[in-house]
Length: 75
Image (cartoon, rainbow, N blue to C red):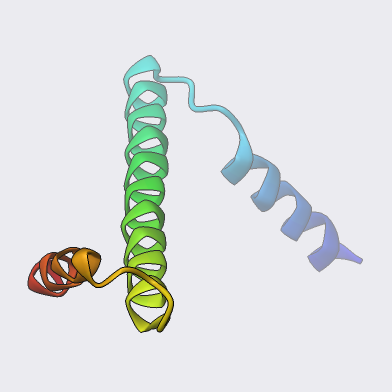
């Protein structure tokens, strides 16, 4: 039972908002950076997936093959 209470106390202290305002701003900036990086990576991966699927489609117009060449040059 003591370990459970100690664990709860540690977790609450870890999850608490920092008392120093600069630490809060740093945490917020890290969160924004992580979100922006995640959205950027997802967008690039999704665009690459869509372009690669369209190029493999036999009914897709061949003039869009340049998009595939461009997307493979980026990756």
